[in-house]
Image 1: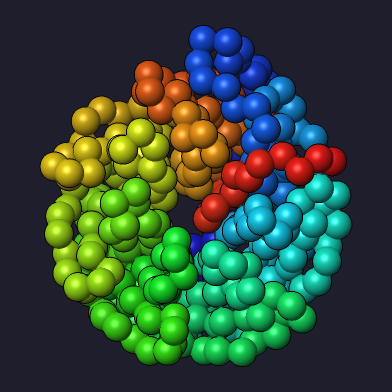
Image 2: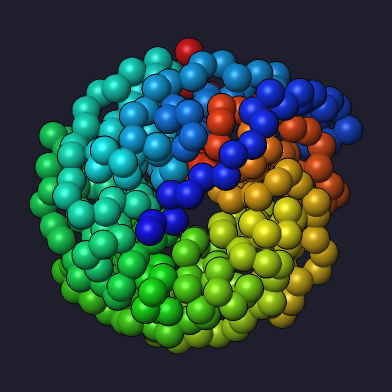
Length: 324
């Protein structure tokens, strides 16, 4: 059974109050696009006002998401319908979609916006999709059960967290050839690139984060975190890791690869991203139907916003406000 099945029954009539951001950093000008798996939609959240600006229907129980601010679009993956959809950020209008076979799961966008990459959980591969026309133009072979994807900021490589192979696959995007298969922790799921250019995986089976040099294909460090880490984002030179079973975010020192502190958030935190100014970390709490806002400097929760049912936001989901 896939990871998105077996959803837990919860009380969705949760009263949530958005706390004042006056004591924390500003998040003016940023919007969060949060996939709600249980209600099959996306909550478009104004992070300045703490208000859900719009809710967009996305059939297929979406979890993965990728924003591309330069293009003014965002992409979702609906695993139940096997559909990748492209939306206008300002209006929430569907611009295009693509139905795939297999088990589409994770998604990432090339820096120039010309391609998206979608992992196939069932068939150990990644689809490369041309965003102008939404057509598959490449397939890349990975280890078993690829989940999270990340592309280098300069567009030179693509990496996948191959969960059931306990490895990271790194591909050269100039040639689309496999550079490295790097053993990491047990069942890596989330993956991201840090401010130092290294790749970080969240290893749900070993409660760890693994740091990988994508050029040399070598592990350079491992940090112990909370139970069942899911996603990782970066702010203020630190890593912020969502721990599903602990209901916390671990803050790690990226040089020493040690956990500095844990922050209590909502229930079953999963997707995590950072505002454009690097001042606020946004956490999607799957079982609480909220996002938590963490002051990246003070390392405390400064706000909470209600979402749809079952927010997961697996990927990059925060972008500048383009109106709406």
